[in-house]
Image 1 (tube, one colour):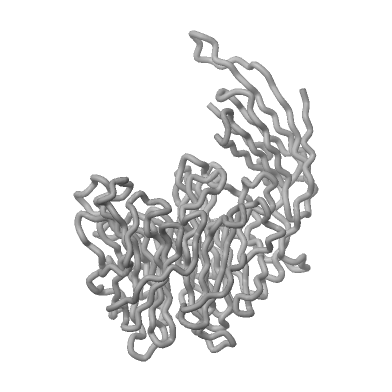
Image 2: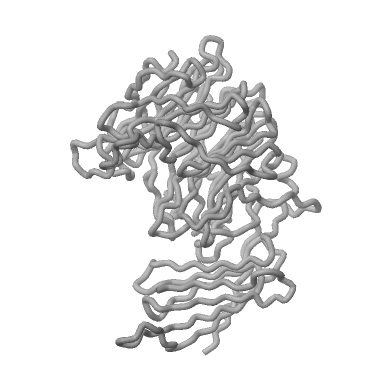
Length: 536
């Protein structure tokens, strides 16, 4: 039986058609069959802006000296051990911070080896890193999910670095006696030493590592040295402030609800994330002093990326709005946001995964939404020309992606999976964004299967027409060999040159022993024209 699936053309994205096309994204990492790397982080060296430094789980260190055109793959090492959650940051003088979890030798039970936050710094632009220092050791508790900011402006505390993270009494425990809290530590000597960690959250969360756990603490610093902090937990977003370099903090305030909780449910992903990120406009622009908060939620019926701003140090906030056009995202997921602000211009960039072009809300694009008018309006630009997906519902794909923004240049980094774990980067100026090609790279073909129902569901996506054959096998008793039982044929139809792509959904007829073969039929496509997926 032959079935032809003719797909409607998908809506165009917000990036304008252009006469000049910019280079596509670059794969940062060398190919690997591992589920890692993920959770990529990136920074622009503010002293040498052509240099980009990045990291990804578990111990990957990436370096580009040419604005992301080429990348050197390294590893980060420390006697305190390395166990992921990388965060890269450059202060105004070009000191590079590489923050990550520990892997303390001799400890293994219940993640006890993740017992501190490790901070390694580089004085040569991110080429090499010192062995590092640490903060937060509080045995037998676990220290998790750090983020870092620096004071680049104030008279009294310029150069200080600030860390926030989550402390677990015992991670993944459902016992009430095991709790989570937000911790803080500071350094006044470019990360060589750190203050004794203190708890800044007035309430506690559970230790399940889910919506009722306190997670995702990030800070931002204004020109007077005030430190602001946000985090998520209990389906709320909390806000706090310190005016004395982090020695003391005020009372936590709930500033927004978060219907989905920070551990958001998005189809076909093991876990995604709506954790909040905070930045402040310290430029000399029109909106100087404005504080921006971005996070994820599904209060409008599907995953969306929201932003709000405050002009009075967090006392009041604007009505939240999405950074993407709501008409292009109904029923489609936008998720895992991160944010950066250009300290020169005050422009804001928000990066996130976006499925607006996926008919079945399966395959991912990556968008950057930019505002030049204080967060009132955003324009979105698709950063990827190469399609990919997450590894699926049974394996961890990471909790965040990242973006940095400096002097009109935006660099975004994200992860994907198409049988191999990949990290991609695209670095463009704001002028370049206006010239991005709206066309996905021609000749792409991907297969993915989901366990969303009793029987497997197979998804195919292509940027050119292709044929799909599904062969069902049975395994006779007392035989190691499979025997063909039946075959179904499908077609994916697509017109190249449009922003979307062709996509099909096939409900399998049995649980296992299924072979899916897809073949590109366009003779103009060179190279590998087939994909095979086994459901065993």
